Image 1 (cartoon, rainbow, N blue to C red):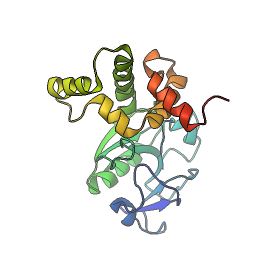
Image 2: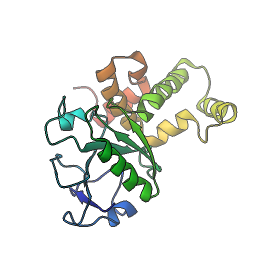
Image 3: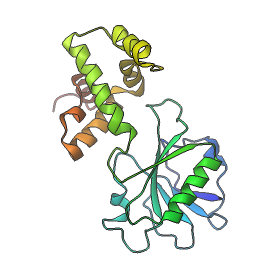
Length: 213
């Protein structure tokens, strides 16, 4: 599948210099259009239209129910911890009304690029962030409570659970302000205490934003 990339904006999934971006073709040649940092619009002559998501739902871009002509729009996000290199995992997001052939075309495109694809329903945060953010919050709260040192918490998870890196090490490397932004967005949607940003993330965000008003 040939694809075109629309939008000059920076992308968490495919930063400047990424091979996926370099392999894009002009829109007239493309079977698929990938929107990065621009408002999605219908392309009835294309097999699929992709839009990169942050924490938001695909419905923000397609409407609920999906607006006529936007049934081929598929959301996506490539998992990336902070400014680490993007992982091989791409989460594809579909609405109930999303065209099956569009989802299949998007999967084929990403897999041809050497990426691993999972398909999920249209929920804020998708699979990865909804799973890992509460774990990061719990680990940070354990530090606050004096349960263990960061070294011991991370070592326990690596040796006991087989993690490649510990949760505190990982969330710190990804950035506490990034963690604050993601968990705040999820907490606003779901209202679940597990998503409420831990104290360390709240402090980091306040310092980034200039402290108290």
